[in-house]
Image 1: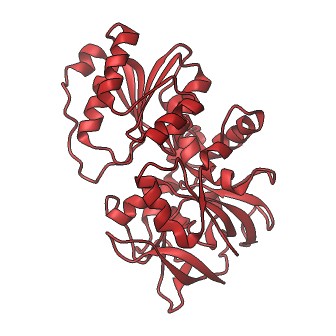
Image 2: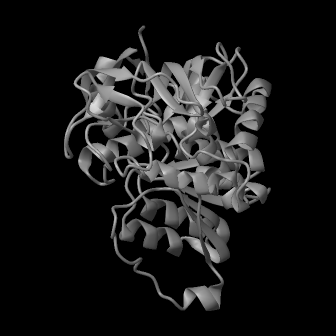
Image 3: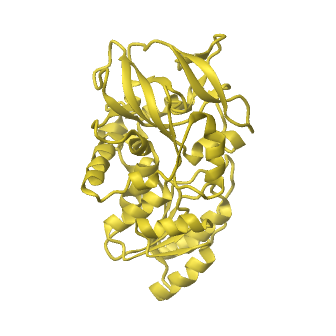
Length: 372
């Protein structure tokens, strides 16, 4: 099958629209007609080289929603015609992590790093026969794709594709960072650094968990305004201003939880975020940093003496197959804003323009609507 896809040939570089060949599904594969793809900043990190690409050429995209068009002989969880979302961490349901309710840490996740190693077969090739890498085994910046069964979850047909695709990453990652990794509780004071496609959902999660004060920090005036609509109680352009307000709110104690979801994590940002947390408070980090970023400039005495915690969070510290259905129900009851996150849609050929809007702080989460 022929498909048009946004491909990266080198890094640094820009996405180029190429015609590719999608193979027929293998025994455990699912072929999907992608209807909508969210543009996560993590994909842009491939353009800049901040995140290493395992194999060129490379299809971007890990947030996707579409319709199953073919399945392999061993596939049981979905069928042709089903509406599905992709998940960037495949989960087997059998390993130690899945068995303990931590499917987001499934050992199958190692497969997303195997492209080009001979351990993971190419499902998409150029018209000349060269293998093409797929982000997280997905490559949702493509009209059609073929992925492992473990990387798709069936969803109800009434959820719009443009909203559903955000359930692949940004929504559960941000929401879960507050609710699960940060364990935000009623009455808490919460600081959220970065209110893009992930941070805005941390705002929603903290609000849903009952936080009394939610301080949103973002240099973009548009995102600060939007954060107030999604549940923030106050917004600030930088952490210095937020820290002054935080001291007033907490009698100098600091935030119960600070969540970091900036575009690119740096040592300085991590250090400032940790300083903002009270005794026995929690710093939750979802942002990616450059490989070998270095150490966090902090006073090590604050760990034994102040009992502070640094908590990493992957997919919101929750198993995808549990989280996505729950979030859909919250969307249906009006407790989760999904449609409002999609501030603008683009065609596949406008993907570089869309990322420019991301960098300029003009959108929360842009979405590519595929034309077939």
